[in-house]
Length: 308
Image (cartoon, rainbow, N blue to C red; front, top):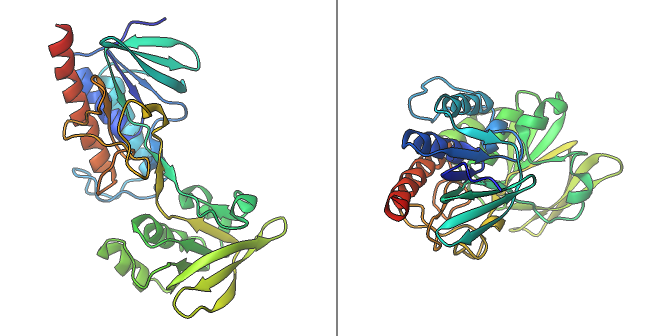
């Protein structure tokens, strides 16, 4: 059992990395657990242009790398270990990973969220064979192809524009008659000659043999059914929070997002939640980083009150 750390941060996306910086600067011996590569969802974002202090457009992977270097500068320990369980032991908290069990004074859970599935026929069968949830990852595979993007929010519209760098045609399929994305992203999509928007329409089936070949569509207003030939379909219809570690420790809303107060406190003393897994109105890099900073500051004060 390892007892060398004051605070454990689970997840190395913008929220976790920001928390690491603030915790270390606050004098806490800090460890960040990450089961994959540091950076979280930001690493699959092609362009970030709305992060304060960086006026030039920056690749998401590069921005995450800058954050990680800053964390390293402050002496934070990063361990590539998958956290399996968090339990309370009096004022202390036990963090069980795939390799060890760590006893710490406080924990910040910053495990983010993952793309939602449509749950439509054929979706699972063609995942990785035409169906994707990451345009940055898979877009270059569809050079001069015809593809579809499903969704109408910021991510869907941004990725549709991104895919025009490779695809010869991009259909943006949205179940409503207007987009939910911010105006600047909508304007870019409307102005792009490669993008055609299919309104009031849902995908009822992904069709193909070894690879995706077409989509069966249904217009919710007219009732018309149709088929659209594409070789790639990119799904951006929201996110599912990674809150399994918080079950029993935090209140969750009907969609599974963690409910916290303005200090990022859960219902369990000494357990904090920060970033995209929280119930909130905006999920962006800047809001995740802010959550992480607040959680670390709050955790530092909690340690002062309960251990010193």
